[in-house]
Image: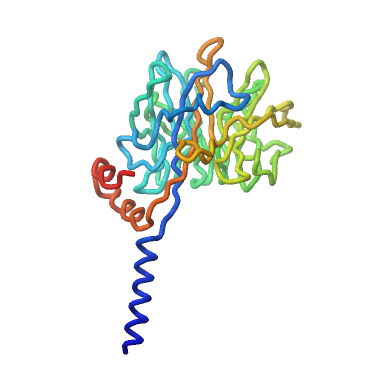
Length: 331
């Protein structure tokens, strides 16, 4: 009897220790916005990146775990930044908005797009005086084109461009055609169309890259500068979101595709307390004058949390106000 009681005590103690001492590691992403005299073609200095511009704590209407995937566009005299917010209550991403008058001071507004599935990578652009967005909708088994009825709000689907579970759709216009880069199953696929709302065809050489975690997955807006095309890719070889590389597209036709890698432009600082110590994985760039660009990037750090507190916060987020949760689970 004493033996059984002792064994039961040991088991109960071990279980208690496992449940209450077990930790999980979270990736906490933040966003930095800054100005540059050129688009990003070489590594950024650590000093320029400094402190983040936007963090999860700036989000006021969602229990945010992190903010990531920034994309910027300007309308009249206002800058609009769309980005992913990971909602702790659902473990799904939603698309939120922040605005700025000068590109330096940013004000969080609100969630502008949410679905029952995960949303991220809100690739926003303007065409024929209309504002469009192609977010990542991998869980919905398709790439969808959204149009704003009342910019920057009221987004609705106007067309399903392609079927399939694709990641990070990146669209651009070149030589009177529309081109779309998407990642799927370790490959980079290329589609094209004569018209934005027309039929989309997969390129003859697609997938144009396979089995290369360094340059496959898109990592931001495609830039066309002086007729030269540059794309950015997430380097996920070491770990997810470790770096961003720039690649120059040298040939792009309906029949051919050629590119060359230039360099790494974003990576982690590897300094313990930096907001981007672990890595970076997205960049957007907007030319705001003849000699100036506005850049938005993201980066992440690791944060350890007791598993039981993580689960408790998850359930409480479904029912309790944001202010209460932040006060109770403050880092």
